Length: 360
Image (cartoon, rainbow, N blue to C red):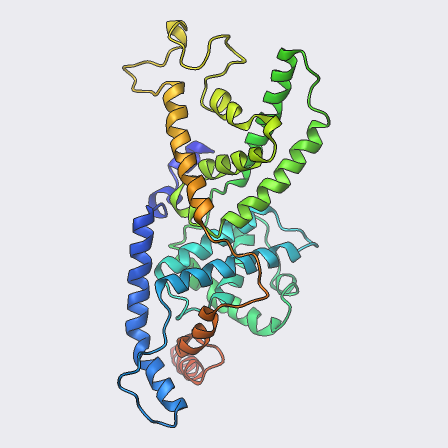
């Protein structure tokens, strides 16, 4: 898995620092505001009977407002994802779709492309890319209303979304790494208990299933953050495992990460991590530049602390019953050229149809 990731387009094309993400979003928002300001002002003047107010600022979203809306639609996507019972969607589908959605709105504004339509398109495309294709009718049957309109939109925007994603459709998600870590954790606990002369973990299979279910739900929620754009999926998964360990101290998750994941491995050696008395054959080569287990643990701890601090500060959305002011502003400043219900959209579609008939 790791070797596949380090050679992937996900790493080379879609990995950013937090500053790069902020700058990219600001530039995208500034371009959209500049483009839509005259349209929004004209609409505002028309709503006031043609009376123009030169001093009034056009009502537009900021980059921060757009990010809140994207976060809200990630939550809406999760709710829709859980509605698929027959058939039940695999977790990778959500990981693919949420990542598509986050990537798309790095370079595109919600004021241009309404997030509800793009969210549905991302989820439908993710089913195909994650090797779980659904017929369009089956997919839209889970949408509460306006199924025919959304069906048409998905058909017409799927290729557009793929183009905006640069056709980088395969996503390395945190679900598989987390599953492997959980299985290894339970095996580590059994080995540790055997060494201590204790009974093995009761109903290990049930424990694995419970940890997976809880961990997957945490991953779903954390896709509201930018972890999928700033960290590799293995670190994403490891942070989730440590989060699970906080509610289950008896599993000694931190010791497992230090001793097994980072290679200090007390179950294989009686010497403590980083002990200088270990044989030379067990020591990393200085000339090779490979870090020692203690260095790996130190580096990884720093990264995990950074993720945990970011998660602690992040304002997750959990309630869809209340809409924010951003949604109301979005309805007023939406680009009419891309609104299927607007006159501008209908006129543009008619021109395109005439052009196509001429070509034919």
